Image (cartoon, rainbow, N blue to C red; front, side, top):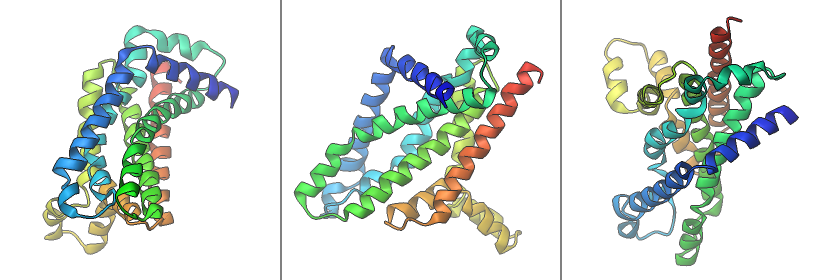
Length: 244
């Protein structure tokens, strides 16, 4: 555990040692506000809640999270520091977990800074705060899913741009898999059981359930399983590069 914490601290310090972290946070907060109050129709709804805030999170994360995850391993490989890291008396799994937790914590900090929006809707009305808490939980879990996929892909290449683009492509498939445009394509020649399976992989479907205030254990298990599966592949990828 101490090893994981050490790696996490190292990575967190690395984020805030450059302007990139602050630029990301500012962009995230600005985009969240624009999507909520303008594109989300916050004023037109005439209702004090954060529905218009959370409904845009899958699309924000689709482009912003890969910008965080692309450097996790690609930068280590490009600079040659991954060999140094792997020579330390730590296991690959601990290194992967430590880096992931650092990126997840950084995302959580960005999400926490949207707290004034929660205060705003409570000032304007009487929102269901239980639903808002569930939505924040779902958003954090979904961000973890995006990050785990991005971390895995980052370990496959030295090029951060390639990691960024491929992560967006893969995460896009997970995001839209439960939407009609995808399901209609399969509906004419696949059984309903397979359609349900495809839809169950959708980030939006699982996240939407949580934003409705229903903390379904199946949605939580989905995100946790996705994170664990992607991180496992991440470990396998790095070990294969070491020839282990």
